Length: 85
Image (cartoon, rainbow, N blue to C red; front, top):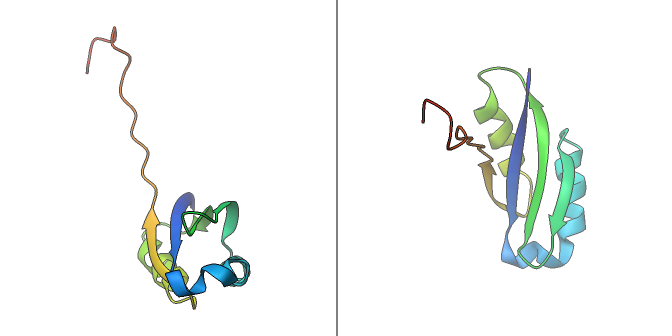
């Protein structure tokens, strides 16, 4: 199992009910780390069994008021003085 971070975008017509959308996401196991009300986005994470991130994304996207669900990807580069870049 791995921790997957997500950015959930709330549909414009549901922005006044963003707290309800957050509650519904949390009922699916979503752990909210931030609610960006001005952007209409919710950040957070889920514990994802290997090879089932698509099913988690689908479950989150099915919540009423959700416009999109995007996985957060982190990239790291070696320091400039490292041998391999």
